[in-house]
Length: 47
Image 1 (cartoon, rainbow, N blue to C red):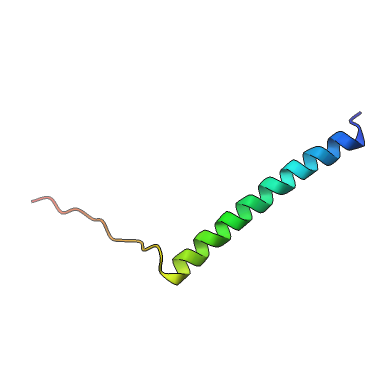
Image 2 (cartoon, rainbow, N blue to C red):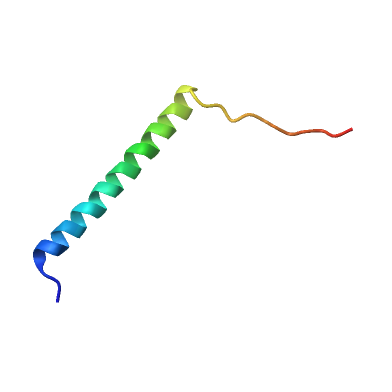
């Protein structure tokens, strides 16, 4: 059976990773909303 200190450490690592991903996603969505990034139509027409 796992000890509590090990489980607390694993929980802390997962929580830190989760918060980092959420912060990154929030920053990207905010940048798209502010117009920093644009999704361009890059369709190439061959003749």
